[in-house]
Length: 302
Image (cartoon, rainbow, N blue to C red; front, side, top):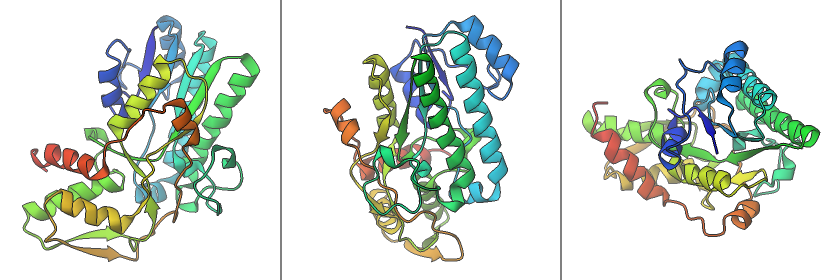
């Protein structure tokens, strides 16, 4: 089976390319996903059996707020272009990667089930990115139902892992938290400052675990679309305290900048379909995962 992975240099892509060493993993200079003619030509020449679309313009809550049009334009265009020309070139299998931020903000039944996807608008702070990703779910379902192709998507919770150089400065909470701990220890500071008030609840998954899910999904020829997340659901403050302990930094205090937004308060997802699909799946413990990334990143110059 000839597999194409877009975004292979990213946090999940780095891990997935190790698990699928025979996959084609073009760089952005080899495949410009914003250029329709370049994508069309690449797909026609490639004759791929399966596309795993990891590439996305993704970043922190605050970068999303500051660059709303960029997050919408980049993602809606690349998702549309790669899906359209994958199908037109004869690709029968396509797996898109979405995000739990696509779910409605006004939902009050937790954990969130897949069928709740269109029951309201996403949170205002991530509206552009969330709607671009939600639109890809609509597009993939339309292709699947219209043309009888295996076009599906997975909806992962927040991720953490090794961040590519291109993505640094726009990291999600856990990676940013680890970076702040490293800098505070290096500079002999007594505290770290986090945005919001520490109350939002979040599920976080190690990128390597999500890569294993994708690899299993593809290799087993699965055909569904569902949530992917561990059962753990902690507050931002609980995660911060856990990280301080994991990184031998319990001497640091935590300050919160309440002038910054919290984002969506809660968005933990139901994983019944995941467990039915992959009953033996286990996730890396969050503290162990944080320590793993901390050890790697603290050995570098930050």
